[in-house]
Length: 89
Image 1 (tube, rainbow, N blue to C red):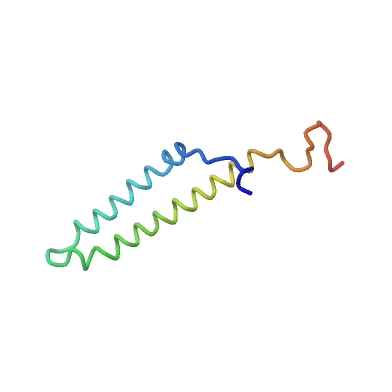
Image 2: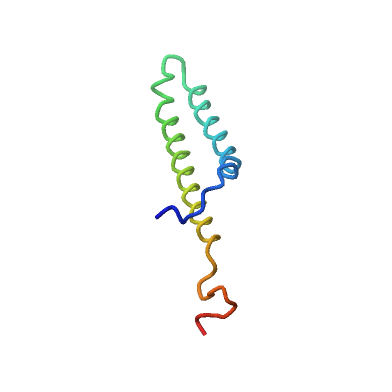
């Protein structure tokens, strides 16, 4: 069934998500840097996991939306048969 759907523009997705990836790396690094000595893992693990979970969710949502957008762009608007006549008339 997916044979008829257009492929994703992966380069565009990478460009869009690069800033998000950088923000996530900074959040994880901040969590580790701000943890007190002797508690680095204990105090940074949960904030780092949450930042990575948010990133995972955003990437997946953006990729799904890109697939929907590509599929919608590949098909003519409803009500048009391609012969210039409106089917709803």
